Amino acid sequence: MKNTWRKIIIFLAVMGPGIITANVDNDAGGITTYSVAGAHFGYSLIWSFVPIIIALVIIQEMCARMAVVTGKGLADLIREEFGVKITFYAMMGLILSNIFNTIAEFAGIAASAELFGINKYILVPLCALFVWWLIVKGTYKSVEKVFLVACLFYVSYIISGFLSKPDWNTVANSSLKPVIQFDKAYLFMLIGVIGTTIAPWMQFYQQSSVVEKGIKMENYKYSRLDVIIGAFVVNIIAIFIVVVCANTLFTHGIRIETAKDAALALKPLAGQYCFYLFAFGLLNASIFAACILPLSTAYSVCEGMGWEVGVNRRFREAPQFYALYTTIIIIGAAIILLPNVKLIPIMLVSQVTNGILLPFVLIFMLLLVNNKRLMGKYTNSRTYNVLSIIVIVAMIGLSIALLLTSFIK
Image (cartoon, rainbow, N blue to C red; front, side, top):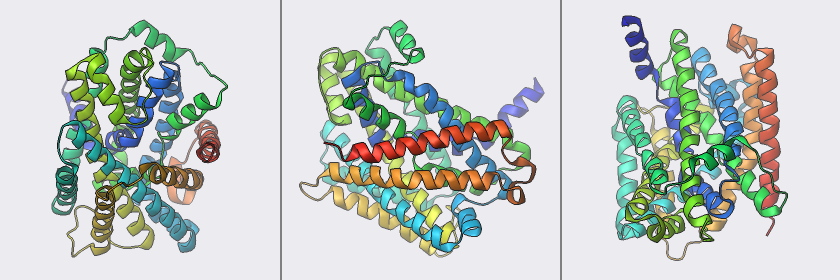
């Protein structure tokens, strides 16, 4: 019993990077994608979350392992092993992608403001100030605690799912029986659901946060468990978002385009509590991601350029790190406050840059994790390499398909 409690305490001390990184994936864009998937296609896409969990565990586990073994972030390793020129182009792509992703998160905050009857010109600046203050004035431990608390609030979607009273037998059967419809709309949505799960910023952020947390090899098994739990939790939340929209909007033939539309449509169908829980979930997810995405960019770029990084450092110790973080927040919030801003082109650019960058990041990761000089005895096994290659080829194929379908009207 004493040994069991010791293991639990160690896990609680180690957990964070995997769970936080995975949960940020359910951001404003992710919630929108899952809401539309449920509203337009019912339960028919739920099966896709099973391979998504496997892919997410494999890719993020390699990041965590590289962090623990080498003590370096992904951008740092790419610069050292592949050169400054390649790193520079990768960082430019990541900056572009994450700026547009951050704008989308502040759009989620603005949409939440409207749902709660709050003026966006009040809520968006306040949230931007909070996000900036949290990182600039905090330490890694304090920031991680806030992020873990934010993860807990995703339970609002689980409660929403139960309030919608779905047929759980149908949900279970849908998750175990793949259904593929060979029409453009279904395939586009399938690619979107899978493609929103693994984005380039995730690998950079998780590896950097594991490094900053200082996790050692003797505790790596707990870090791996952190990754696995994160992968399951984020997809369970996504399934509940699909379920609540499928059970209410799809059955009534209601079409939506955004998470805000979903929340509004739920009010007369599933009740006021379900509406408020869904709207609160969107606000929490948007603020959470608005913290992480600029932070991921600052980590990656500064590591890639060899500058000082880390939330534990003060502004004067890591000026480039905090300047970049601050700039991305200002840009993201300011653009959303512009009148009549068009969000669809912004999200399209983000999607395209993610699709272009992801294959390169995954290939770099596989080369790095199999480098015996870097990883020693902790390189991938042959079986793990086969699984990794299958996942990476699949993700590259999806990225290409996502790029192509993005331009199809």
